[in-house]
Length: 100
Image (cartoon, rainbow, N blue to C red; front, side, top):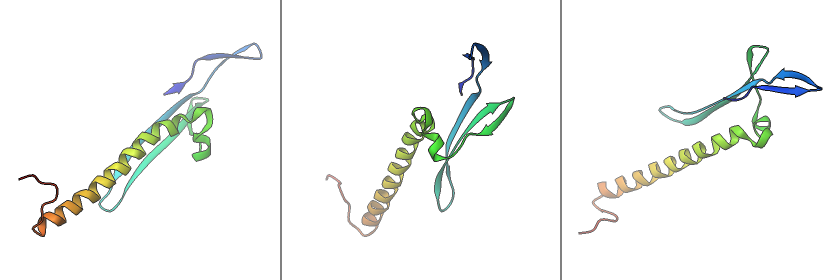
């Protein structure tokens, strides 16, 4: 959650809307993905705040939060590929990288 609080606009106090960013990875039997949403509270209701372009507004708060998750997901995929290669090598009788 971010935002909220009181601000002055044209010498009138106003209450700023709050923003909520929600980011989580999802994984199915065939694919992986990332769910990210930003909502803003206006007049007591949360509304969806936008798309990729709007995510970059204000220094890109949601982009800053998404980037490490995306990098971790990419690394996981690379490790999965390496694991498959090692398993294939071991099953064919070769052992890669082992010290005897």
